[in-house]
Image 1 (cartoon, rainbow, N blue to C red):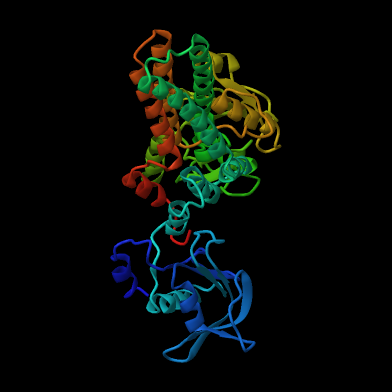
Image 2 (image 1 turned 30 degrees about the vertical axis):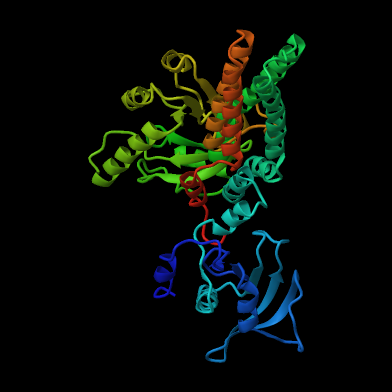
Length: 472
């Protein structure tokens, strides 16, 4: 395959081509899928599929059992189930064939090579979904929801992506566009027929409705920061000096023995990263090396990497040993993180307390302090709740609202729309030119059209679909 693919990838992208790709991750699994889409999907399937039952003809949207055979060599490659789906009732609205074979890397590779030799070309990243968009099956917001669905790290993120994939956000945008079109039609009618005066009541209703539309759009814009958290999550560095229980806390939070825990100071030499679901927000926990002065070359490198991670983190989970008094290493760490958002976990509350909480509060007057025992698993839920509140400035809840946006492209398009609507309202209130009112409403419609993919530039489309994996 390595000799074939580069040439095929260099071909100019064309929606007239039949495309093919492996649609399941590489590796070993029970089942792997090779997907085809385009006008040659059926003829290629007929060339390479040898059914177990004959006579045979493909029935759309039915699975058929047989073998994939190389027609040139007469060699069977694998036993498979194959399904042909006739356009337009398919994901891409083109003819689609899927070969469900065994999930070994070499099996999938050989079948894909065979399909490419029969006239298909290798799909670009996201090209199946791009064709679904170009063929009108989904709008651009739903196409973007596909990648969010694939990349979701928590149930809440999955729920947000699923709601967008269902088209609820798109339907609300289309409803707003319809109202703006009605207002634009009224304004343009009076521009074309100036002898017909606009009734004051009509202008008042238009201003009121434009204000309602603007407020709804601004609510979406305001929801972005929260939505981004559910989509992208945050980076949280677990910091503290050696032997305060950072790795133990990581293991307790993850409910698995991810980090090595020993009584020996400096056990953690490198940064360990794992995802923790904190009420729907993916928190990328980074267990770091203990911050202290050391002559050990390897440990010094770990400390350097720790400082880098702490500097880049959205949140620092500072772990302090409550059974020991604060020392020089603690105060140096305090200086390292004084400009960061911090949650403080005072660990080892199962032992007699020797740490001064008053001193900690003096250094971090606005940051939360939670007493825990990683060993006894005490205070962990309270700590997770405080992490959530520090991230969102809200109390824990069951799930996010469905009406939040998670995509910066959506936020920018909506912000632009809101600004144009606000200018139209100001013109109406100041008895400004109707031509300018029409221009602002038309510009707002263009921004919404770019949002859903009706007027989106080609380079923006390419950037969106380049985020996809090949095969989706």
